[in-house]
Image 1 (cartoon, rainbow, N blue to C red):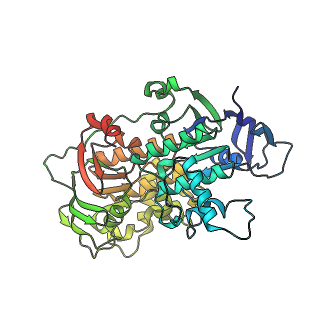
Image 2 (cartoon, rainbow, N blue to C red; image 1 turned 90 degrees about the horizontal axis):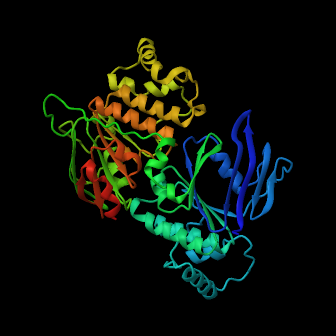
Length: 482
């Protein structure tokens, strides 16, 4: 019988009267890789926090490695021996890999450090884990995958029996997942378990031993490997299959056109998008996404090549893409596109005076906007400070603002990096509405995920260069291209 590593037994967790974990029960054993797939994010944050630290709970018990570590009777906030891998690194940037593995490890007590011995020990550990890394390399120079490798090695040295992986699709591109999953399999062979939080079941199908469908503080269903099929999971999630293309009466040509863009890792990138068309650029190595987003946003101007928006050349001196009729969103527009200290309406109408070429917006304009978007937003449109809104409501504000500004072009970096299934479905719906209105959409991503439901074409980028443009009937071959 396999040893139990983690068990939540009828756990209820409340905050300010709201229930986040509702009689939650779940367990996993040594060496298991268990996926946690979120239909609704309510309670996910609390679940992650309770796995790492024994915060007070209102009912139930939590066991780690067969020992009771938390219960409604116990209010001691002790930490559990788990290691969390997410966007925030726990490594020290200006130290070497060897130093991070040993010197910064909790419990390391040596006053005098023998560098040669340290490197020999670190080299021995990396060989045990089948990792090939330059031990003298400083963390600040590591790639994302190398940083993850060091973190996993550190978890092993610390004696952690459980890795908690948080949303790797935010960290790595499609080409890196086979190596990442190989690392998790290596840990599995050594009896180390992984609790794998991910927004996309496609990714989980490739690695998990079972998948828990999480919704509103409970496990709705547990999928076994024989159920890792689209048709098995379809009844529990919403599939967005509607994808129509805006068809103008006359051919208007490309609304957004890139001609031989070269800059850093970008090499002679050319692409054209017509009105009402959505094209996804899949950069599986995650080499060009940040730079290309910055170029289109007007942040970087030292590139070679030409960009045309609505048949007009985009001047490099223009620092705002909005003046070109283009809106560029990064992967977390709630932080970069919205202002938490402003009201919903203030956020919605911000820069509208510039769009309308007015020195000041009359109250009648604001009232008109409120009336127009009340049907979509509901009562939250009168919210004074948007920090209190849910993630879906904030995304609603983002796309209401886009709709209000009537851009010709929308560029979105990693459009589905945030949000549960309901939230992502909502984003797809709003994108479809923009397409139907004739907006040209460019999606930049390192992993396809839900982009297949909205894209008319998928462009594959390899080594910074455009490789091939796929038709919808060819999307299934993408996994064989990497």
